[in-house]
Length: 427
Figure (cartoon, rainbow, N blue to C red):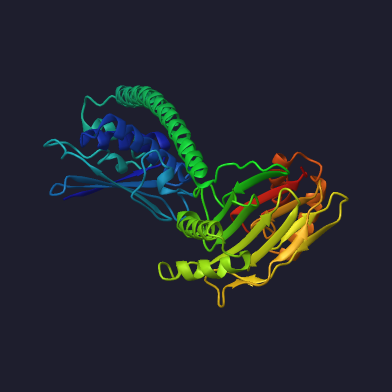
């Protein structure tokens, strides 16, 4: 392994020397061109300032590596970053720039570029470097060869870029087609899902009833679109004596699990009511019936009986929000019936609250999702009276949905919501 050095005083001499040693070690023309440009750029500041630059190179035959070192006087290289050079340097210090390149050994008997050039101190030490490397050294031809190599590399990159662009366009076209197919499939699934949800909700709703003297309407809204049903359910039916029974249930929790609990409650209440049990005993008896089968059931319950002929109203409560009564003249009040819900300590209802409806009066039964969406039930009850006044003269079938929309302009606490309106029209 032999180290050779050469002192250069001009850029032309340096580039000639670098080109000669690169040719001697059979570097690829494109690599050679980059090395020449990098050396000229790294030593440019020193050479322009009249300072000599030392070019040193060593070939390690065992490794097949050519190490090229460009050494300038202290501060002579200027601010050079290794990655900013056309040929990225392996190391950069204040005085040295180092490149390590895979290379071939020089041909036997070749002379070191510029080995004898330093004899005349008045001449550029690198001006005859190519002549010392061989008689066929033609710097212009080598520069042209380097240029052709760079152009060929650029053309290859352009062709590759074009190919990749075509592949990307084809891929994008395929992805777009896939997105269209997925969107169509999603639409089909959404349609099927929506149909399933509507069928499920319809299955949970009791069939409409007709009772001369009463108009009934209901609005239900789940807490989230991922759970179409929840623990808020209602039931209505006509008893053998002609009175209308209404059950409002709010079971603890959300989703299908709470729906099951609410269904158990409504079915038990319906059975007891049809068997003729007194209104005030039904909540307690429902708790007794369900407790052996599901001790985890917790639900608030509001029961209403209305005589459509006379407007007489009976209410029994089990920890549920009170019903709201709006008279035809605009007065409003909450009907507070006392009792404890199913699964609560000492469940059951006290003596039912009785009231008589006049033609045009509106009764609103609901769950706490309607009044507690802003986490303040007292404020919610005040807003509910205002919303009910606003829609008092609206058609009955529009009232529950319109009131729910007004109450849910701001939702801080999402919950299942049920609103049921009863208007007494009189026979």
